[in-house]
Image 1 (cartoon, rainbow, N blue to C red):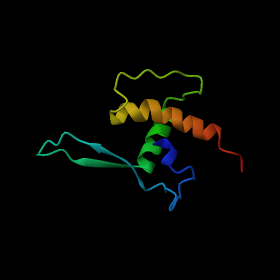
Image 2: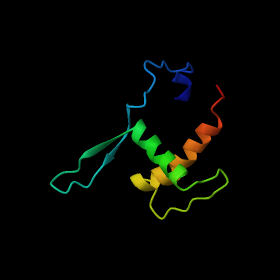
Image 3: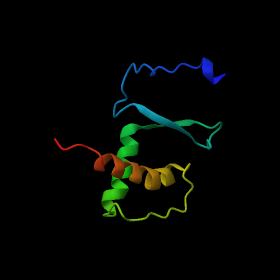
Length: 94
């Protein structure tokens, strides 16, 4: 079946922006059914950089989080901080 799959690069129509949706976090819904909380790129990046800067973290520091990574705070504190450090370290100088 894999032989029938396309090997061409997918077409990118629009590049994501800072204000685009990154993911939907479903809440437990205190007043009824679960609701989708929209998390945008801006919120995630600012949260991740906030954890990094407010704690004066260095690239060699290790973060222990007792929250599961699928929890918004756990994911932003642990994964987001590491992704932001990686992105910053690979950004070419202007």
